[in-house]
Amino acid sequence: MNLYISLFLLFGAVFGLSTFSYRHFFSEGPQQVDTAEVDSTLGSRVLWAMVCTFLWPIMVLTGLNSARILARRKRQALAAKL
Image (cartoon, rainbow, N blue to C red):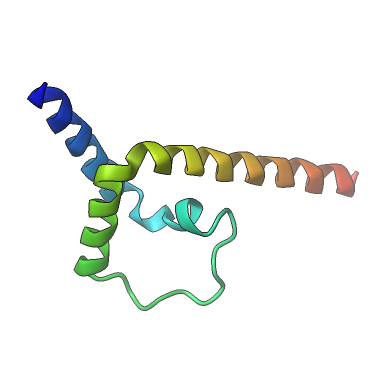
């Protein structure tokens, strides 16, 4: 049982560290804010990793939803050009 919990938390931490630069897909939706924050600090990376450690299944679902929305918008933009 402890192995499953450890793997869940480990995967979430790795997921959080690897998706830090794409965090706008998980919080704000598919549109990124025009004004970027100051360069990312270690503290913000650690905070994002801690959030994702426990909530990575929800983050995966919201990221997939954002990717679906972006794909639909891209298809609509291509159809509008034709």
